[in-house]
Length: 282
Image (tube, rainbow, N blue to C red; front, side, top):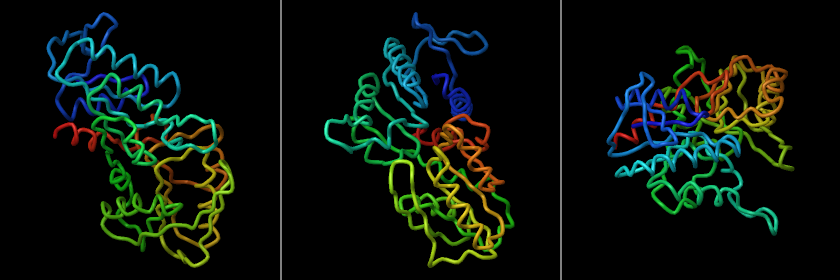
C-alpha cells in the first residue's frame, strides 16, 4: 500500500497508480482506507511518501511512519521526494548541529529503507544508517522540451550540476553539455562567469537540482542575455521557490520555467513518479 503526507499528495497518487497499489489514508487508530472508502487490511509493505519542506512536514512524515509501523508490515519504505536540510550536511561553524544527520536519524528510527529524489549531496544518505538510495528524476526534465531545439546547450550553473545537465541531454538525445564558473561569496551571494564560452544563436537549457531564492538562476539568465542566445529554458528538480524567487526570475526575463512535482508548485509540470515507481518495483 502507498500513503503520503500532505506535502506529497499528487506524487503519492501517481506512484500508486503506476504500481497498481492502493493509495490509503492511515488513520491514527491504525485503519487504512482508500479514497473510495475501501478498508485495506494486510500488507507486505507500506510505502510512506513525504517531502520534508518544513519542520511541520518533517513531523508529519515521522508520525505517518509510526502509523505504518503500528500495522506491523514486513517492510516500511520511506520515499522522500524532497529532502529538507540536505544542504546542511556538514559542520560549517563550531558548535553548530549537522541538521541533515539529525533529521536522517529521526526518519531512520521508523523505517527499513529510504529513497530520496536527487538529494543535494548524495553523501547525506549515509546519515540514515540503513539502506538509503537516490532516485534520479533529472531525465524527466527533458520531456517538456520542444523537438526543434537549435544546437542545444544543456547548462549547469556550476560544476556540481553538470551531471544533471548530462542526464537531461542524454534523455533528449543531442546537444552540448557545459557549466558556468561559480564563486560563492556568501550563503546568499554568488557570482557566475562564462568568459570562455559562447552560446550565441543556440537554444540553452539551464538545469539545476533546486531553485531556492532564484538568485543563481537569475544571474545565469542575465549572463545568457548578453550572449544573444535564442531561447532559454530554466528547469530544476526541486522548485523550493522561497520568498520572491518567482518575481526575481521573471524580472530576469525567464519565460520558460518548469520543474518536477517533488514539491508541488505551479511550475511542477513533470512528475518524478515514474523513476520512484521503478525503484519500488525492484
